[in-house]
Image 1: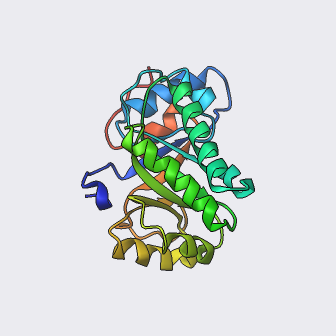
Image 2: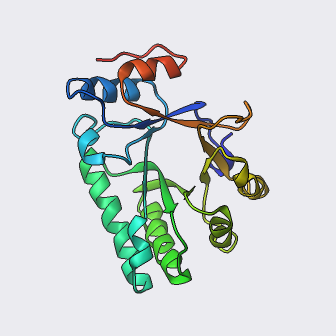
Length: 213
C-alpha cells in the first residue's frame, strides 16, 4: 500500500517531457496512458493535455511556484486554485489523482496555509484525490513546513542522501514516498518518477507491454 492512500501503485511513474520531434508527442502520451501508471503532466499540461482529454488514467500535477510572492493567505490560495483549474482545463477533465505542492524556497506560514486551504477545497470538491509535497529546496526548510502541516498523503523526494531525514518523517506519518532517480536508491524505496520523452522510453520502463498508438 502506498502510504495513507491505502492503494497500490506501479513502481515506475512517468513524468512527461517534450519529445525531440512533434510526431512523437501523441505516441508518447498514448504509450504513457496505456502503461496504466501515474503520469506526471506538470512540465507542459497545455502541450500534453490535448492528447489526453477525458482520459481516466492516473494523472499527477504539481504547482505552487508563485505562492512565495503572495502577500497574504487569500492570494496564495487563489494562485493554487487558478493553477489547478488551468491544469484541469488543459486535460479536459475534473480531477487529478495527485497534486503536489512544490516547495522551492522558504515560505511564509500564511503562504503555506493559503495553499493548503485551496488544496483542501479541491479535495472536498473531488478535483484532487491525494495531496502531496514536492521537496525542491533545502530539506530543512521543507521539514520546517511539513512538521507543522500534516496534510499530505505523498511526498516527492530527490534520491540524494541529504533528504534521508524527510524519509524518516514520511515513515513516521505513513506518507507514501515517490523518488526522483539518483544513484544509490534502495530497491525498496517505493515508486520512482522517471522522465520520459518517447514511447520507446515508456516501453523500456514499464513491465507490461504498452501500445504507442
